[in-house]
Length: 328
Image 1 (cartoon, rainbow, N blue to C red):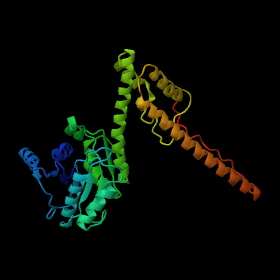
Image 2 (tube, rainbow, N blue to C red):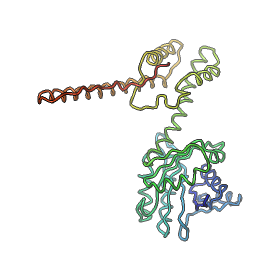
Image 3 (cartoon, one colour):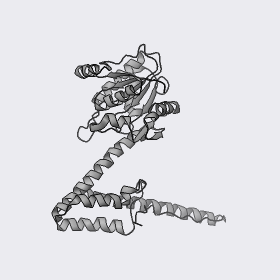
Image 4 (cartoon, rainbow, N blue to C red):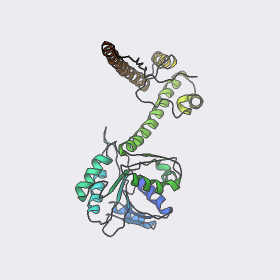
C-alpha cells in the first residue's frame, strides 16, 4: 500500500485513534492541536505533533477534521470546529499542492458542503473540488475502544462529489477491512452518522422504558429483553422497518402499541417514547392517506379527460404506502 501524507486536525480521542491507526499502517501523519499540553503528550509518544498546520512545502495530502462538535442544548456547538476549519483554509492558501479536506467529526447534515466549504473557500481563495478536494468520512469509534475500532471497523462510510476523491479514500481505508458504503452527497454520509447514534440512543431508551414497567410488575427484564432481541424481526432483520414514509399497519402492531399504553397507565407508568411511536405513526398514516387521495383524484380526472377525448384509459392503482410489519 502506498504511503499517504496525512494531517489530523484536532487530536483528541477520535483524532489520536485515527492518526495512530494511519501511522501503524505506514502513513506519514502529523497531528495538529491548539492545546500545547496535548501536543507535548503526543510528542512524548514519538508522534509528529504541532500547534499549527503549515502546508507551504507539503506534497498533496489528506487533511482530516477531527475537531470537537459538542451539543449546546438543542444544537451542535461548531465554534471550535469552525475555527479549526478556518485555520486549514488559511494553510491551503499558501500551498501549491492540491489537498483534500475530509470531515470526520460528527456534524449536522449539510455541514461539509455548507459551513466547511464556505469557510475553506473564504480563507483560502480557492474553489472546492477544483483548488482542493472535499469529502465526508464520519467516524464510528467508541471512546473506550477507539484505537481498536479504527483498526477493525465494522462499517466505513465515504462521500464526495468528486469520484476520484471517493476512490482515493476507498484505497486508503479498504485495507482496514469491514463493510464500505460510498455516497456522492456528503450530507448523506453526515446523516448516516447522526441517525446511527440516534438509533442507538432510542433503543437504549426503549428498553429503559420497558424496565420501568418490569419494575412495577416485579419481573426481571434482562431475560425478557434478551429473548425479544432474538425473536423480534426488528432486531434480526436489518431491512425491517427502514423504508421511510410508510407507517406500520395490520392488526398486531397498532393493537399492541395502543393496548400497552393503556395497560401501563393502569400500573401508573408513563411511557413517553411509546406514546411518541403511536403519535408519529398516526401522523405518517394521515400524510400517506392524503397523498393517496390526491393521486387517486388526479388519476380519475386524467381518465375522464382521456375518455372525453376518445382515448383509451389506463387504470391507475394507488398503493396504501403501508409497511408490511405483521409477524409471519
